[in-house]
Length: 278
Image (cartoon, rainbow, N blue to C red; front, side, top):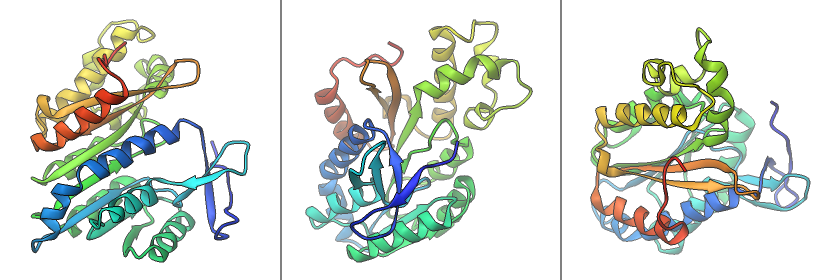
C-alpha cells in the first residue's frame, strides 16, 4: 500500500500520513525519553556518550489522516524531549528506505541543532551499518517502528550484541491477526523473517484463534531471550483503537533493571494490570 504524503506548510518539507493512535505511541516514547534522562546525563558526562536509533524513521513530521493537522514524528519527539532536560543524544542514527524521507528528517533535526546520520537503505542493511558505527561502550536506545510485522529478526540480533542497549519495538497485533492464518500454509512469508522457525511453535493450532497468536509471540520471545535479553527484561504495553480493538504492542527490551523499572512504571500508569494476550 503506497504511503500518503504531502508537504508540511510549516517548512515545505514532505510529511507522512498517520492515524490517531500514533499519538499514544509518541506519548509513551516521550515518557521513556524523559524518565531516562538521568541515566543519559551520567553517560554524557563521560567519554562514550549516548545514541538514538531508528530504522523506520519517516520524514520527521506526520499529518492526521483526512486532515491538515501536522505533528512531530518520533525522531523529532525524541530529540525535543531529550533536549528539554539538556540531555540531547550524542548521536542520532536514522534509517528509512526512502531518500526523500531521510533528507526531510535530517533537515528538520539539523534545524533543531541535532547532527543526524541517515541511512537511505532497507532496515536490515541500516542495522548492520549502524552496528558498525556505534561505540560499544556508549548508552544506546533504539526505537523500531515498522508499519507491520516487517521487522527481520536479524535486526534484534545486531543490537543485542551491545551491553548498554534498550530497544522499544512496535509489534502489530492487527497484522498478526490478519496474516497468521494465510501464512501457516504459505511456503514463505514476512513472518519467517520476523520469527524464523515459528511454524513449529504454532503446530496444528487453529491459526485464527488467539492461542495460536500467543504461541507465535511466545516463540518470538524465546528467540529474543536466546540472543541476550532475559525474560525478566521484556515488558509489553497494548495500544487499543477507538472501538477497543487491539492495535499493537510496544515492547521494551533491555539489559538493565533500571530501564525496565522506568518502562514498568510508565505502562502501569497508562494501563494497569496489562495481560499480554487479552
